[in-house]
Amino acid sequence: YEEYHYSKNTQRHERNLILGVSYGKLDYDIYNTIKDFSKEKHINVKIIEDQDANLKANLLQNKCDFVIVRESPEISISNDFVRLPYTCDEVCAILPTDHPLARNEQIQLTDLANEEFIILNAPMLRFLVMNACKNAGFQPKIAYTINYGTNLFDMVAHHMGIALMVRHPSIQADVAVIPILPKIITHVNIVYRNSPTLSLAVTQFLSYMKKH
Image (cartoon, rainbow, N blue to C red; front, side, top):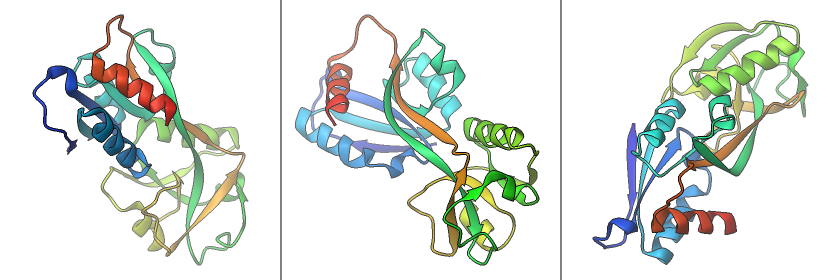
């Protein structure tokens, strides 16, 4: 659980906004967008970084105004939430640079059937990976399940297993990132409560994000 602040001096409640961001999503251009929004609209923005499940709970409990999270069934079918599409990620294979498939432009998921996997403990991403492997006709051999904060890429580089992971700016040169077929796409949304009354800050943020 981490917090970040972008602020303009003001004491008005309508000039405050709390944004929950899923781990890893701060690597997009969201930082610059929020700073520009805060500066232009003179609205304080507090960012809370946490796991998707905690962010959704905070949203329902009015502890934040928006969350940026991966698409999930409980959000897509719920009348409690409104979704604004933000971006999408493609899941790739993360391999050691000396892996026999590391120089391929793309690989079939079935080519990884005999590999040992390192799985990130993120429910939606885990579901996507497990379901994709099942559809490809195999059950992945899981060597490690790790939490956020553990350097998955170092583990792969040290031949502790391979991983299926979305592209990430912090990926180092000592691993290969290879697109896989069939493609695994995960959608990321800006989500807010379905409420008849929205604060000025929420309304302005929605308008700003739709334009940017």
